[in-house]
Image (cartoon, rainbow, N blue to C red; front, side):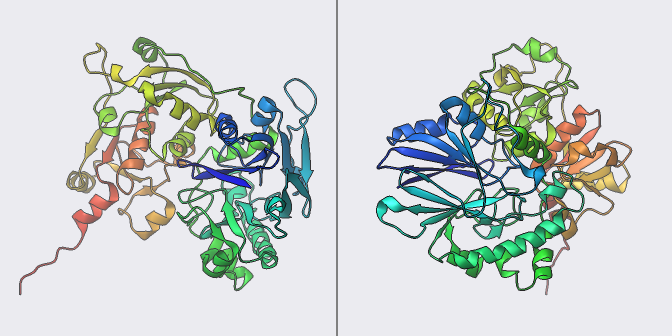
Length: 479
């Protein structure tokens, strides 16, 4: 058996290519949308992808199952569990007419790719239709599974959060019943041997849980013994309280992903190749009507940028930040080094931001280009303290609610940067706004968004860490 995890560090998402070397057939499980990577990996290992499967309707990325079915005719294996609201709506909408080759799966079903068997387990809680796959390599003579593709059910050190139907998709009152269903689902682990490996769909940094481990894989036995969420299941209420507490605010784009993955993502047919445009074209755009994404570092952006542009340096938080502040209906223009175009285009289409209309070389943004550039003010903690003391600014804290609860600047308003675009009517008034996060990174993204919306903003350099250092009680070494 061949198995490779294909991991997206930015979304902390894992797809799995599993192949039977005897027959040369392979399946890709929980693929992202830029499927050329999986096809190339299979070919490099003398395999051909004949199928794609999903553990559930994902909220954090656009699924690639429809894309790979279109491009190479792969058969699609999808859950048929859950109620009528959790059925895939695209299986009979092939772009050339008719239906995709597919099989809908119920608990206890199985299918094979070559000599490898995939047995289905219905594991609701994270979502109603969620399934896992127990993988047995009969070609190696095995009669028991080697691994379990757990999707967003069991992670290393955590379980999939059950609140997203309410906190991200807006289904009021859904989180507690989902948490109780997840508690009931835990009993399915009792029938799985401890030696079975856990192959999860996410790792550390994913917003699909609150405490995912950085180790990519585990075993059922280890997780039963040491997973804190499983350990909290001494009683149903204790588990519900534990699993629902401290979950981070989901990025705004999560609701769109649920919608698109259920109804059917638009078919790309390949990776988009946006054209190069000149700086004059970028300057002529209405920044209120389009999204101008500037990928330069914060200091360069702060010192001078196209008025109304947004600051998104290329780092691991890039897709989460962009997906929280740019709408999928926005035309997008990139200010970027040409070397990073492929990377950023992939990042954007993975979260459903397809309308990439052009790019301009970031080196063209210079003070001597003949047109005024915008700037953003940034001050240190001492200056911020003086400003606040003199009522010179309202304080906006863009950290998570859990961070805010642990300590905050008195009188500040807390709105997580991943939800800020939807909560502009809750901003403290009047301007200027002194914006901060923990260290100054999330607040930088927020400052650019707020300035684009017409607000007068100031970024707190060093964030709350710098504020704590300034306001910490002073000790003396005197005897």
